[in-house]
Image (cartoon, rainbow, N blue to C red):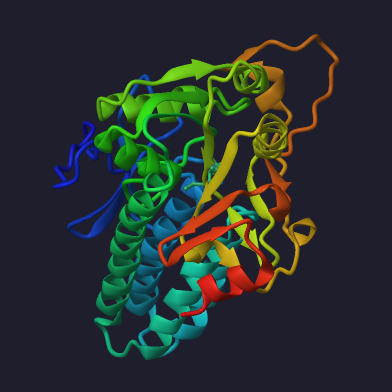
Length: 355
Ligand code: MRU
């Protein structure tokens, strides 16, 4: 299936990576971007768990949405196998999904919401009620991103130069994006002049995904090596660093793609604004502080090789933590769909997370 452009009434908003079509889930295979835009069919919960683990689908909200649809696939199969015991049997599938990646809290948040829907669902067609819940999670995420886009863009003095890290865009969410939602909205209003994107070694979410996504939507982007970010700030080229989040702890500490903490330190040193854009589904009040957030480590090969070619000296070892934690006091503004907190305190985080 070729890349599917879904028209949106919002400008600069054509990319969608997750589709429920007919009876099944289609995921844009992000491992192949930007060379190929190929969708994979996920027809079972194991397909979805595998797609999250191997990063066919990635980005905190997108992982949660894919998992919600994975629960639908699991329910359909479990109901067909035994209509009386499916609610017990599906627990094994939910645990498998929850364990696919550890850091993004949206995964557990979405499965928690689907557990509530499982509790309420009845009869042989119960999976259809779960599909309605998964669709609601998906649509609410896009609506939250659009709201955050407005709120974040309103904070930019016109015209601003912004730097973003990893991919916190349509590819990482249900659509529109968190950090890239602010950039989309700001660019449309003339509040964003220049977008810099870090390459984001080792998986290159910046050069492969963010650059592809912005160019699909006719937003010019200039790539820089991760190590060039501080120099760009020192040279006065950056007004705001704008990033997403994989988890916001109760005290406001933020886990995000490795390298985010360095950007926050550098931004504070150079007087550059540091904005975190995350829906309230990314807030985890059960985790008091950032140092309690589980940080995923991935295979050393992601460091030792580049595009499947070994680049490290033979015998070299590698350490590959893929997230880090930025302390709350380095965050100038936290943008959620429920509002904005400047220099967020635990009380601000609790108020934003309250339903
Ligand atoms: O390892 P990834 O690509 O799943 O990591 C994604 C990020 O760190 C994003 O910045 C984060 O999920 C925010 S996405 C809206």
